[in-house]
Image (cartoon, rainbow, N blue to C red; front, side):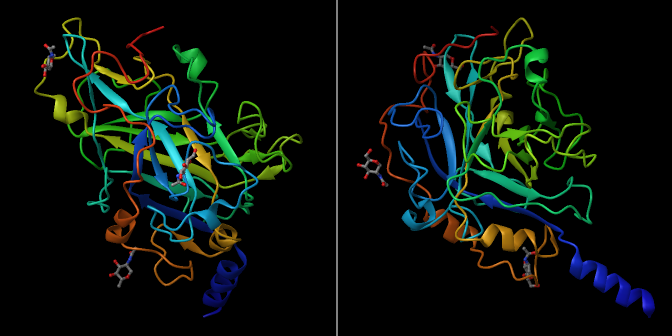
Length: 342
Ligand SMILES: *[C@@H]1O[C@H](CO)[C@@H](O)[C@H](O)[C@H]1NC(C)=O
Ligand SMILES: *[C@@H]1O[C@H](CO)[C@@H](O)[C@H](O)[C@H]1NC(C)=O
Ligand SMILES: *[C@@H]1O[C@H](CO)[C@@H](O)[C@H](O)[C@H]1NC(C)=O
């Protein structure tokens, strides 16, 4: 029985949390308190999940978790906000229609589809999750991606902002950095993985990225070391968002064979995939979770309170600040954008 004891000891001393949870949609509108604070409307439409203190401006000095009264995420202590642009279908006549979202398998019923959020210490396929990581601090926020990227070279500056052409809900291979070039039976999933090395000092930076870095050599997946400039290893935050592009299968697609989906800011290539994160876990609840041995299904682990999808949905539907039609057949994307490959 000796191996049992050793195993338990090893288990107790390692820090091996990987959590994966769903968040319902809080609101869809043209607001971006990270990149365009104070601007209502901001330049393009987003879909936002998380704490209900999300607003036009989110002062990093303020206590965000303290201001939120609920969250659309499964962990009731997570008042963070997570957001991305939204996808539109472009018809042959040049008009646009918003592509609805669907929740990942197992999370059916989440309002607006929402998104699945991960915090991992090591790659998803590594069930040991042995690396030690530091949770983010109050006021922390970050961005990943480049709105101006229209070529593969520009997009590959970022690791792993990808698309998966879903044959079924379970498809997880053949990720691409451009939009899938052919119809996808079940939809398109975007996966956004944030950098994992923090400078240890700044909660934000002018481009919302410079305070974070990828590993100096290797990758997060290969446990590459963080550079001296950004020595603090954080958990990898990942979003998965599923777009119900299959709804448009009956529509006429472009005659030239090009693909008919476009980001809400006009990118028709897919290379400008990007995401925003504003940390808002209550007190040290995220660090406590990361320090618990737990892998995806965290039943039996003391992770604090979680809520049902019905309760998450009760927090959804934040009153709109910007009033405009984002759902009809539109002659231009909200904010005046047109689909473009450049
Ligand atoms: C959002 O901010 C506006 C002012 O910019 C304020 O009037 C409104 O009450 C805020 N909404 C919430 C939910 O805090
Ligand atoms: C454009 O095409 C869409 C999709 O076929 C259709 O629903 C819409 O009514 C059309 N709009 C105009 C102005 O023809
Ligand atoms: C936790 O366990 C209970 C009872 O076995 C089960 O009903 C529930 O679905 C489990 N939750 C998760 C997230 O696996």
